[in-house]
Amino acid sequence: MTADRSTQKNRILALIFTTAVVALGLYLFNRFFGDRLEPGHPHANVFKIPALVLWALFAYFGVRVVNAAIFDFAFRLRRGYEAPSLVRNIFTLIAFTVLFVLIFKSLYSDVQLGTIFTTSAIFGVIIGLALQDTLGNFFAGISLHADRPFQVGDVIVVGQQKHTGVIESITWRAIKIRTFQNHIVLVSNSNAAREAIEVSPRDNLNARLVFFGTLYTDSPAKTIHVVREAVRDADNVSEKITPIVRIRNLGDFSIEWEIKYWLDDYAKYNDTDALVRQRVWYALRRSGLTFAFPTRTLHLERKAITRPVTAEEQIADRLSAVDVFAPLSTEELRQLATATVGHVFAPGETLIRAGDEGSSMFVVHNGRVAVQVADKNGPRTVAVLSEGNFFGEMALFTGEPRTANVVALEETEVLEIGHAAMKHLFETNPSLAESISWTIAERQADLAAGSVQASQASIQESAGVLASIKRFFGLR
Ligand code: CMP
Image 1 (cartoon, protein in one colour):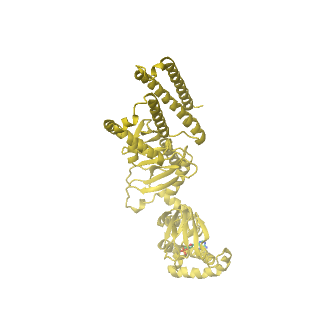
Image 2 (cartoon, protein in one colour):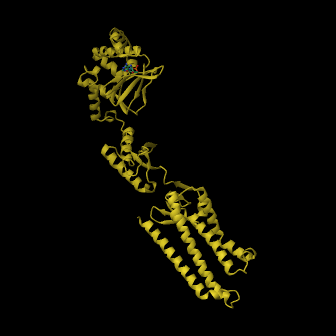
Image 3 (tube, helix red, strand yellow):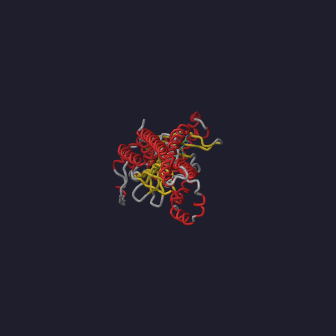
């Protein structure tokens, strides 16, 4: 049994005990002084006062016992949760008032209670002024209960001071909130009824936003993946909805991110926010991603140092793995690497659009792209190209418009090679034009037939392609 339930049980036992003691007092009083209450007895009215007090006490404790029996046992048993305290208070008030009037009437049958209430103007004014706020709270409490906009256990933000906490109780006078600093805030019902209240219901999947920033040099696709995986594992982050990681702003010093996640228990959002931030820190650290801090980037104009030597070597390495560039010498590869320009594309971005003009080709440095042509059933993928494959050569070498769309399947980095760089290579490597013409003829055949088998037929066509490359580049 929880501590809560045992104190409730003790309270009820104490109530029953007190009721029994008062009943005994009443019995003894009647036994010894009953005859003095008889009409006609000279001190009857004086003896009626303790009798009235004893009866009133008996009525009060009796009502409390019945209240506990109905709401603590019967209500909880039927509905499974505790009855709202406002309902209990109203019940106690009405039952006690009715009993008190009955007791009063039976002891003082000659006094007209109704007339006292209706004719006493002073009484009315006093009640009106004294109970102005109390009655306001009382009726506001009733309307809040009728609306049921929130319940015990919900997290709310209320008032101009934005009091935030978990609702502990709703009484006929006020809403009691326990803040996250473990303070109690009482918001009167009439204030609550006037103010805008933000409610995060206990049985609802409520979301939170947590922010962070990364350097512009860090890959967004990688950041999304790393952070989402780190956050979804954290305690109290709901498994029902996958956290969302998205760019909220491209700020002065950083890419600004927001994480949206849903909580199992919203009342613990401070701890969970902190845990999420901690997870993000470790995940970024493990993956080599960097939190942003105010930085200033100086771009030096000298061309030679715009690309670090190591990056150039990497590019030369990548180009040496491209089959058509196999005949090139190390020096030629280095020169070609210097002439390339790197571009990064996000997953789903289009690198080349069919029908456009094109004066450069591309080598896939990292990632994958799909070559797609429009079909009557929508886009059809004719090839998927990965690291070391090239594309865009058809328009570059023949001068024709682009033959297909090329779309990034994941974050993809490509190296762009322009017309001038290729012309220089053709002049020193005549065999290059020939091997490229083979690839072009094969790809043209694929496009025409929609199948790879057609590539045999392309052997004859490559001669035609070679001739047009030579013509286009002014080669002999
Ligand atoms: P280009 O026509 O300049 O632009 C679209 C590119 O898609 C094209 O050059 C080729 O590089 C590429 N492409 C077209 N068809 C194929 C194919 N069947 N296999 C691989 N790549 C292709």
